[in-house]
Length: 107
Image 1: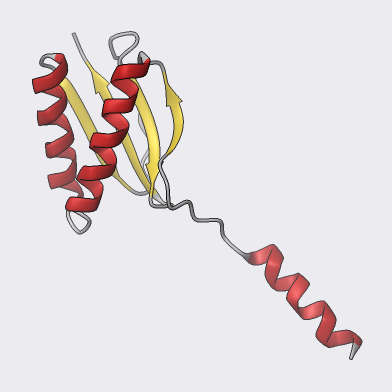
Image 2 (image 1 turned 90 degrees about the horizontal axis):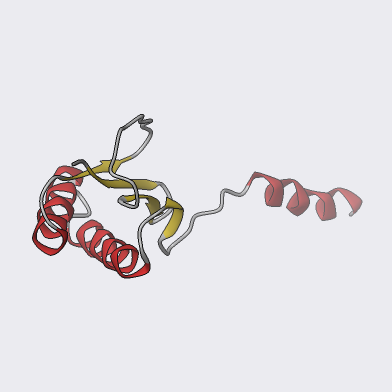
């Protein structure tokens, strides 16, 4: 009986935490821009759940319309990046657990 009680404890340590909400890892945008970018990113990823390229295109085009040209967006899993960007125009977030979204503006 003592062994059966120890088994659930082992399983709890192996669980992976998945977030079902948007989790902003880094953002230096003003509040209005951050809120718009987060909402837009979440909507794009839900609408194009099977096509990251289409989600990124949707984010980029809508950010260009709302905040002026030269926006870039990357949507995917397991990537790293090093970019140059316009100050106060970068957001890096996770959506749906493992989907990373990076949105930035170049001048």
